[in-house]
Image (cartoon, rainbow, N blue to C red; front, side, top):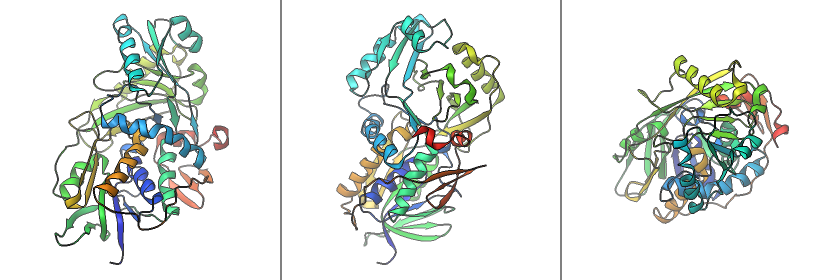
Length: 413
């Protein structure tokens, strides 16, 4: 049958970009459909750009499994593509005695998972490593390997490499309906730009993943969006912290982190708030002021320093605190939903799991030769808001990249 893709990926966030890269590299003919004009425009354009080791994730969770598989592979990819990253490590600081009691529990959980060598450090060691911190800390945990990347550039490089290996990407393409006839092996996807046909459809719809699933007659989860806000400081204050300063995590998440981007901006966030809409809201001035006060209480040198930007993100959370990845061979469908704030960290692990589902549960073999080699990319920022990779121009959609565009790439490689 002419013009049939092996796989159609719906959604061009970081997870969709990782999946189309993985499958194209393994020899599948892939098509990516993105409803927005630009890729990486929804949840993935409002994250922190941090690669987490998974030290505080449940060892039995799918999230943890994907992060654990993804983390070592991500460094090979970053080096192979020539992308910027920095291992700034992380320091979890307890500001009260009640929080101190949780440090050994977190450290033991991390060691038991075998993914991080987190260890308690003395206050004298804390202030030796982080002299810019306020002097009311009560305890600390040192967490190696926590890393920051350019989250937009990482996602875009994945889809760009998939394209140069033969993948097709269509933006401004809204999926409107799907159908799979019982008598054949094809799934028809009706969109605002016509019909596309594939053997397997992968739903990476992010914030709209539950809506996309309904088009296939599935309804196993609902998106319950959570809003996060960030305050961004100039690069002139980057000397104030040497690692990412983490709070003690709660049931809601990792909490509000003080961290440096790969380009040197200092950021405080994200918050964890109920979101009324799946659309990205504006920053709230009261919340931003609270973030500023929190930053000044933790890092003394931030007092009086003006912020240069704010931004928000919306997480595609579900009713459960884990990823939802499942396969429906009878429908020619794979759902990748509930990929919360760790989507960047777990993206390559998610992509590998999806590849195995395509191969083993859908019995779909690659239709061409593999192309798993990693080739360095020629990347050039084009202010005020574009980047050229090789000879293709992309619109930058992430504030971290936009704030860092005046920093030479070479200084981070």
